[in-house]
Image (cartoon, rainbow, N blue to C red; front, side, top):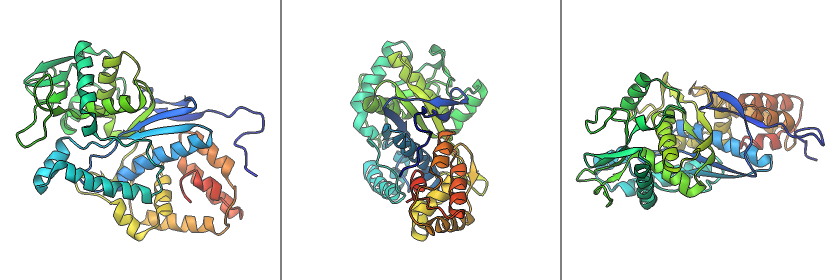
Length: 383
């Protein structure tokens, strides 16, 4: 017999999540179908643990939402054309789409091995060029963009709510823009914080015809176009790693709302960074722990438990001892076989801003009492 999350006849308390834009833990109360968009990878290298931690957080959220009776539609895009993948393809002497196909096959295999729920859709940026061109036209018509130097730029000064997601000051925005590909020194911009919607392609880069000349899309416009194409003008929840808050998600929100005049996202959810040696895991730095390598030595449930031991919003440090601890933890749970121990406690922990460390502690306590915890562990994707 299943254990109810609340006493019979009582209304279920709302699930509460931190909202980046509102800077508070808020009730998340979507309708029967929950629309979600999570920024996917740029497929020019293998998936690392930082990627896995991000997608595992949204996976656990979906599992609890489904447990509460919702259907979830989670779109995870593929950025298969941007500066990074074109640069890597150039270095390797391969076609950028061949590189993307190879790395996406590896990524999808890794995520399946970790037991992630299948994405509702996994659209590629290159599939959305007509949508992107139409979207840019809408932004221009709304008066929030301009043409210069063969490119189209979004004018941040025209949009009063720029900053609504990140709440950063101008100096901080400029610093992050310089660090994260925003190119504030572009002489064609009216304001260093303006961002590109369409840009001319270099001679060895892919190019598509447009009203503004041949070129390719900017990074931010790809996600806006894909999110709207797949899920509509307003989506329930959008997120990714916390390093995407600015400029990527700030720019997404601005251009989307400028184009449609409607709210783009009801709830912004961001996941903290995984560090190695005190520094955020990054492809550019090479300080990575690859998912594929972990799966050679450890089973997927233990990897999930090691990640779940940290709250999704926190930055945390990876070390090999985490896998030893997680493996021992799961071994203790398995001693008691199937059962519904800790189910009420785990549901309550996940409803409290996806508190997976508290959920793990509840599973440990139930196992210590000799209770089987298989059903509660499955809410964390640990089977």
